[in-house]
Length: 232
View (tube, rainbow, N blue to C red):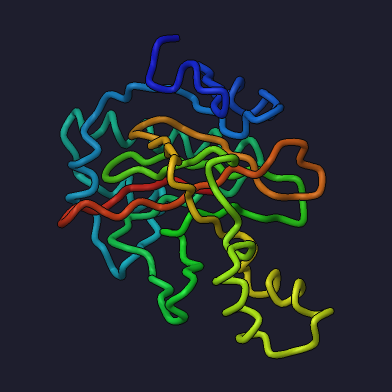
């Protein structure tokens, strides 16, 4: 299959939902892409949905209530089918109309919002699925292109001051406040944009996971444009 992700050892490329959920992460491969070129007018759907806050969850009933053109209806059917596939698989997909996420800039020296490169963590065996139907798409980055922020001396020193507690509790403090999930790109880092329309499965940090968790971030939104994002 010829596409922009072929030949990247971090990414496995598949051509069906069945392959997406049944392909195993291995070695440095911690992201799997169901590569698709979707038909339909997703912009029309975005234009007819109502944003109630910075992030609005869109239900299947919300989609079905829209009066759409033939191309808009094609897009709607694709989204509804993706939601059903993931639900039948046992996942809990959410469709979001998104203006922006909350920023975390309170500390100044470290950011822990989704715009920062981070990994997802779960106590149980699970993966993260995501698909951007419209708007800016997320980035992933190879694990050897980043450094854990808590290991950067200047940041670690600031975190010690913030902790202001017994040394033996410091590592627990870093985990309790999710500082250990965030990463800084190295100077030579080469992120990969996930693109629009592809359904991705990325590795999560959990005890049974054999691959490294996939480091990713939310994109800065395009000015004046909402994102339509499926995630679970």
